[in-house]
Figure 1 (tube, rainbow, N blue to C red):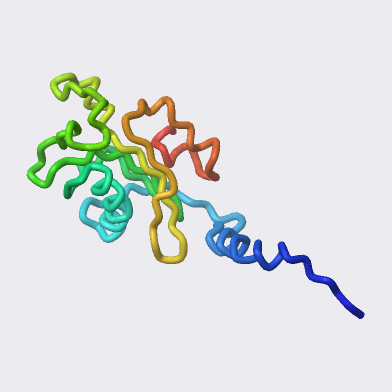
Figure 2: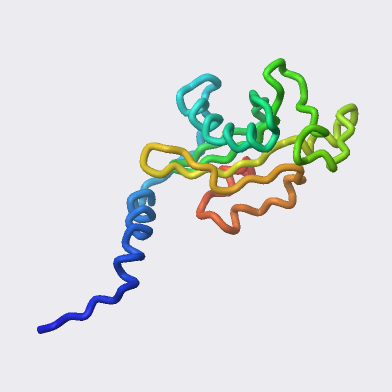
Length: 155
């Protein structure tokens, strides 16, 4: 007997294994948690987004966390990047120089929030989606990712 193996099956196998291994067990009820400030998980999540944010802003940053929710292997963050001295970043010196932000206007400060969606694969968190200078209502990530609405803080 000669069996002919399709060339696409071996190519799809690694992607299938990652999805299968990282999927929750059937019947396993997950709950959304808010990591404690300075906990290992809290630090891991911020460390996962820090390289991209620092690259975009061309400066070292710390974060003011507005929201950090974790549901199994998924995490959602809403953070404002700040300079290491706690002051707002001068966006005129970044690729966002055309944003024309008035930091004295509280409504415009909302635009500084960085929204991040992270996925844990094996033992590491990866930022898989992010948005900056958006109003939260425009982000409908729950339509694209298999997560509960509670992850985003919508009860």
